[in-house]
Image 1: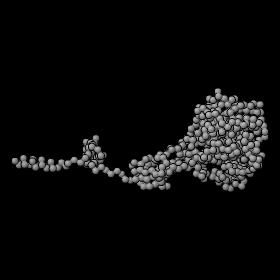
Image 2: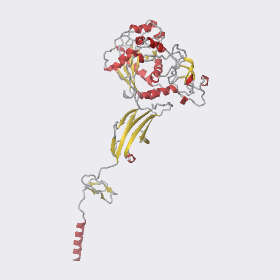
Image 3: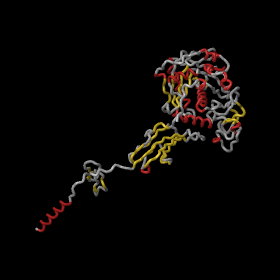
Image 4: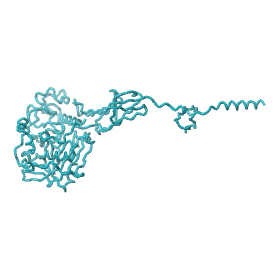
Length: 493
């Protein structure tokens, strides 16, 4: 079932970490806590969580601070400000992604919706998001900015936009961030059911970031940042960079990294072939992603932490996801969505019917190519497909279960059965049929080829033979006897 939503989390929780994916050269990621929320943390929090350290003060940081405090309430938006870009299911069944405009003026409204559509398409066309596009809803939420674009403090450019999106954060030119708290508050008011908010900033420069509110610019290559960052957001994947990040906390809790102490067994052991040595030397790789093993260098250290594949989108932005990261993403998407969209009959304490008059049990599922549907009566499979009707063998009391399973070969290890959903009915099938009406009989019509069974109605004639059936009439044999006797007397006379 779907996990509970938390669209407006406390800033200390939702804004603890922000990662930025950098281009191909495998530069280290960056961690920052927006200065808007630094005051929410007690001094001891920084001692216990070294990753929460603020990046050095820089023009972009000062720019965001100057914009505070900000009013926590936005004016109600116009109905046309929220548009559906991609619809996979209901909000309860899907992951709801809201693309939020920043740096688009009122006159650039159409440009924003076009940019949002392009961003959605580019995101959902990337595996494994593409195979599971039906589990996502994507919306575009427009807020007009007084000025167009984003700030570039290193160039002396400061823009008055709705959510304060600025490049150069922490002194990194391509690190573009927005005021996360302001975005979450605005989206929470406009669309409370959202799961993830992403700022689309009206700037052609390559840049973006991740964390509580990912940011992506309009540069075409920046979409790789969003694909990478949602790997963090959805599946809690770790960065696989080997370049150091001072002060980053040790650990290997993420599904795609393992420390030296956790190489036997590996979390992703199901993907490792028996002939692959662990640890695995990069010189033994047969492609960018194979064989799956344990390659040293990940999570901002070059030794002691291992990743599953030679390369991956979590390591370099021009890559696809490796098999282990794909698996983690697919499992995460299933945990927050539903493959089962509707069922008939609907949920009820008991479905009772008479044999021959039972309903056809029918379900609708998300259009995922790898789904398998199995119907079980009291634990025994009786059918496959999206429908089933009780038959003579189903008389009595039963538990009817439909199992919807994603049989994708991209998942080898699913200990929590995230790829399985069930619908259950309590079913009673009665064999008793209505008693026949005693005033109706079936007459043997000889040439009719059998009995013609009449319903409780006036006499009916078979269109094929003219045979008639209906209420019982008086027998005709006494009349025949009288006529035969009269004819015999006349002959003797």
